[in-house]
Image (cartoon, rainbow, N blue to C red; front, side, top):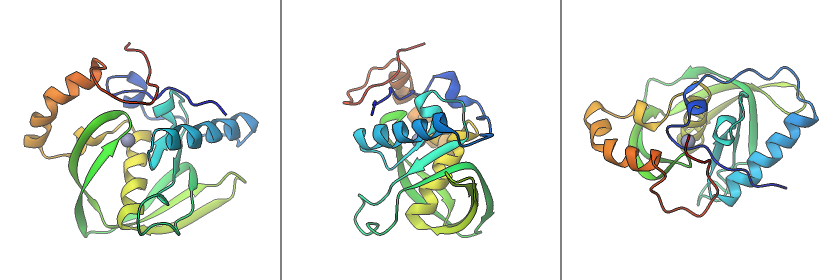
Length: 182
Ligand code: ZN
């Protein structure tokens, strides 16, 4: 299964809202397999389709490598919608494969409800909390063209600026394939 290059902050596809998937055909299944492979190779716990240059509303998540979440099964969400977000919000540090080596505190809802299509084209609706909710919201953000710097406090965004420029220039030390600068 091929490992595919990951798009990097500055790549335009990361700033666009992705297209809904009409049918879960063989091509989509292949894309999903590549996304899982690539995410695991890069030691990520979530990956959105536009992070592998695909204009499709899909993300994959596997938080089972994280201590305490071994029982959460890997999941793929197609055409996801956040249908509920708790008023209680919590701050957690986040990273992103498209923002290598950058970490930042992000405030998000603690509990959410998400509706999506599974690979059998069945509608699913689940409630998720803490880290699982966090990763879903982070990946959902990718599908609407949002990234960590859009979710931090204005002061923090300023502090990230230097690092963001380095990332855009590919001036980063990472061991997974990334797209060429464009
Ligand atoms: Zn990300």
